[in-house]
Image (cartoon, one colour):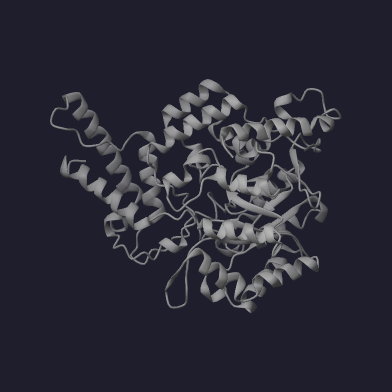
Length: 484
């Protein structure tokens, strides 16, 4: 679907929702009327989308339970040894439900395996009909590929979440590469066959759905487009039916995912293929791992000129929620202030207009031209067997790039002012790099073993990016010596 069709999506839903809107409050403008279902939650005006098969009224904001708060500060994703702050999780879940959020997304892999239990404790304090639970069969590693191990993973999810059924069950990370027991790398399709077909688990999950233990069956897509296309072909043929699919969608990935990384797929294609089949999309990475909340200063200035009262993140959330076949937009929220802002953004949604869409496409082009590493610091690549801090290296490089502190060495004709600016930026970069990443864990220690590559959901060629960053660091070290 091209840019024009993205906006046509908006127009079509305006017509479809006119009858519903007549019963709603008159202050809602036409630009807010993209949705097929809008109702007044008890504590606000949360926007809802309807699942076409079940009729579920799903909040457009979905709560991603992968960055749960820990005692002290920070999230369980970043601080793996810290204790999850269950009291804070409970408070945030309570606030979310009170303000209309009813979709909670977790996984056996999130928070080092602790997310499902924490989520279950928080949600079990509410009536079961007040929320929808989404979790995943996260059988990534070869030792979970057996039929019994995968079945046990599903049963553990039910137990930890304290429920008798899962509302939305996903095959997790479809398309990702994997390694077998002998360390051989498997393609996305080979990994899919090992994880779900050869062990009969996909058919077993279909049976669980028939028994009522799963209400909706879908998959989250990361990786080989061959797998995505083949699963949709199965849907067309009636071999398997997908009730929903989780994809990465944001205004940068809409047209640039493949250009940033040739192994990724543009969100425009993914969403369009699902829309053709009336399959609802669940959106992950609306902020691209936080990158779209930390855009360069010149981009911030452009956005503030358009909507000075809005945060930078709100632009991305509005974009992700605008297409009418989006069921919910996931956000991993560690802090209450993030939860409050995201609830406000979707209470109700103000859809992206045609003019704003064109503006965001220009912003996407600006960000793409920076050539940042498309890492969302998920830590799936860790630990590195040679001790590199891969997410920290990429995170620091992207931060310096966005802030304008990755200068290119000046040429012989550079003025004294230009040379002075170069050395100031060079100093800033090197100090930040050394403070953020211990010297023995920096990019120059990468030997290109490729151990990390199969685990990356973004399908980054990590050794190649390490070499690029190392070459850059060495180039600026040579001009200036040890004088930091």
